[in-house]
Image (cartoon, rainbow, N blue to C red; front, side, top):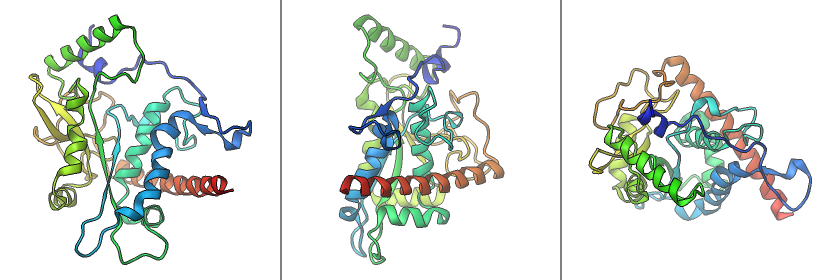
Amino acid sequence: MTDWKHSCTYPTYKLGFVGSVARQGNEDKEQQLGEVFTANVFGHYLLAHALAPLMKGTAVQEPGRIIWISSIEAYAHAFNPEDLQALTSDAAYESSKRLTDLLVLTSELPSTASSTSSFLQEKGDDKHKKPIMYLAHPGVCATSIADLPLILWYAMLFAQYVARWLGSPWHPVSSYLGAVSSVWLSLAPFSSLSHQESTEGKAKWASSTDVFGNERVVRTEVAGWGWGGKVGEKADGKMRLSANRWRGQEDVTKESREDFEVLGQRVWREMEDLRQTWEKRLQG
């Protein structure tokens, strides 16, 4: 009540389960995967790898697009590289979304090329362009992700609208408006997207609205990366907003940008190792 906008955008009062796993039909702990990690990241990771050969580009055909859905709650402090699947964390959801940010935003850097090539291209295929990965998030929307009694559902809806009316740009509220960033990434001309990300840096594209619910797509600030992976970037009020910034957010420095890339390299290697391990298990 005393910090409405911020607490409705970056809630710190949620309680998460610790150690939930997606059981594989046996009790071998080494063959169990984190439930949220599997649902939010690893399942899609395997699917994207399987479909990547169908999305390769040629000299006359643009490559396919793989659009990952992140969250405004992808806090850096929620992710522990020593616990990739967040099995010891009570913030497994936030951890999985931070992992998504790390994977996508570093996917076109030279330092991750060996891992991304093995993930997105068939072995020995250097003639085709690999699919491009993009990152989006829907802002804060009222969905059934949490099963609430009807009265609490309407209370949540009211709280989110009030946050928007108080000036939060991150409350589309409806899932229809929340989808605008993903739809835009799907339909925007490839040349336009490529130009924006090559000149302004790779972005986490967000669904945003004004107080009247008029939607737009903007860049989201990511801890350690900023709006485009460039040190010294500043909010411009159009594509790069500072409104309702998470209070723990710090400006990107040369050191934090380097740390982000190093962490990106590490999680790409570990995800590829995990993918190859599980593909062998599933084939066996």
